[in-house]
Length: 85
Image (cartoon, helix red, strand yellow):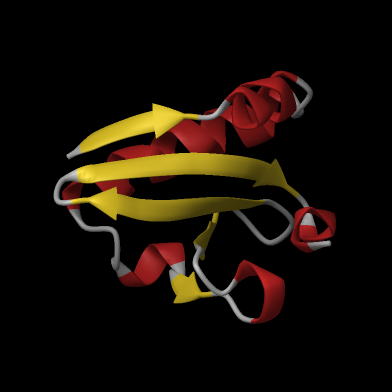
């Protein structure tokens, strides 16, 4: 699986607290093995984000992503629940 990072994701990632960055990296390792691992709580989004998915970094932080093509995933946004707005 190839993961690409949007410029928005990269900008948001830089502003995360150090601990959230560490957790995000750990969860990305799990995601690469199995995007639907129970530890990630991966789910399809609804409404204006209906074409995207999300998984949990921890209780507060999420990553919004998209399955683009076979074997290609785009990480679009990272942050608290406010990223859904």
